[in-house]
Structure formats: structure tokens, C-alpha cells
Image (tube, rainbow over all chains, first blue to last red; front, side, top):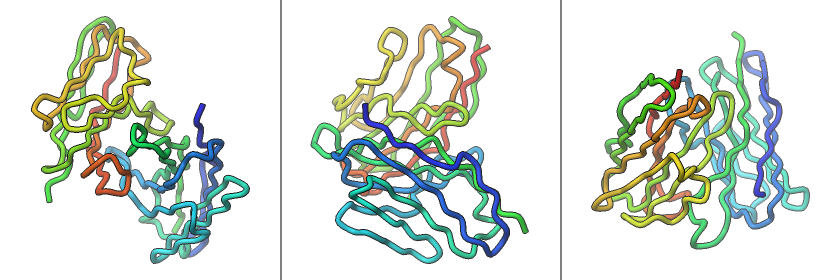
Amino acid sequence: QQQVKQSPQSLIVQKGGISIINCAYENTAFDYFPWYQQFPGKGPALLIAIRPDVSEKKEGRFTISFNKSAKQFSLHIMDSQPGDSATYFCAASPQGYNQGGKLIFGQGTELSVKP
Amino acid sequence: EAGVAQSPRYKIIEKRQSVAFWCNPISGHATLYWYQQILGQGPKLLIQFQNNGVVDDSQLPKDRFSAERLKGVDSTLKIQPAKLEDSAVYLCASSLNAVPNYGYTFGSGTRLTVV
């Protein structure tokens, strides 16, 4: 069964610190790896995404690091701010026309940034 | 651009009752998804439509859940009869096509409580 495992379950970081969330996947047929941010009462919103032919992608304070051989990827949030406090989900999308668009999510990480 | 609209926002029903959720995707989005998000977990795909045809319903409990997308626009998800374990947030998402990075957008969801 296709799975994406995410850790830690919760994370507390001081303002200005670095938040790091890790994910591992089992199926090598995934070809798209997004990270989503979800605030209470809202749906997940795309934060940043990467494809497996790239080892790192940076957008502002958010960076994805991707290790294809280890089947792992991580989200780094630099200079974490209280407004970043939310639940973060990694996800993976499998290849194939009849799989197109399907997202398999990790269990989520609840991030709290203390002022 | 208007987002994905869902209604109702909240619903409380007794077990064995029926319930229906409605989703209006972003205009022009051919692909529509229903996800179930149980508290403390990541969203899980229930069903995916491409226009008004079903692409993937392998995770839909078909003995009690049904979904339709008439005319390839709005969609409804129904549960009949509901069980306690159906308590969750039901998220609708849409994308331009069955590719996850083509404007994939989630609605705010319907929170269902079965008592």
C-alpha cells in the first residue's frame, strides 16, 4: 500500500528559529511532492512542491530538500514566525493517467512558533 | 478568482441518519476530488471525478457513501446510513486537470459530527 510517513507529530519552535519536518515514502512511483499548510477551520493550502529530479527547492523562507535514494524529503522553515503556527502536511502524487492528481498525505505536523 | 465552495460548514446528525454535502469547484476545473480528514490525520482521497466521470473511487465505502457530479460542475457526496466513525471533515478540491500542480485548490470543508 502506498504510504507517506511524517514526523514529528508536533513541533514547538522559538520565533526566528528553524522548523524542520520530515517525510518518507515507500513507493517509487510518486513523481510530485507538495507540502500543504492548514489553519484551523480551513482547507489545506499549497505551500511549496518539488519533483524528484530536483534535490532542493527554495521559495522565500521555505525550502524542500529531497533525497531520492533514501526516499525522504523535508520542509525547512527559516526565521519561523508566530504566523507560521499551523498544521503542515507532506504529500505525494503517483504517476500514471488513472492516478493523476491523487494526493497521498502524511499524518501532519502541528507547528507552534512561540514569540 | 472564487475558491472552492462547500456547504454546509457544519453538520451534526445521529448515527444511521443520512447526510449530503455539496461542492462547487473553481470555474473551468475539470477534475474534482472528495477527501475525508479524520481529526489528527491527513486527508484521504474518497473519490476523484474527471468532468462527470469517476476516475478513482477505490477508497469510497460504497455500501454507505455515494457521490455524483452532474453536468461536470457541482458535486454532492452522500452518506447513508452514517456511522460514528464517519465523523470527520469532508474536503472538496478541484484542479484544472488530473495533474496535481494545475491549480489544485481545497475548499474549507464540511465538519460532520455523528452522535
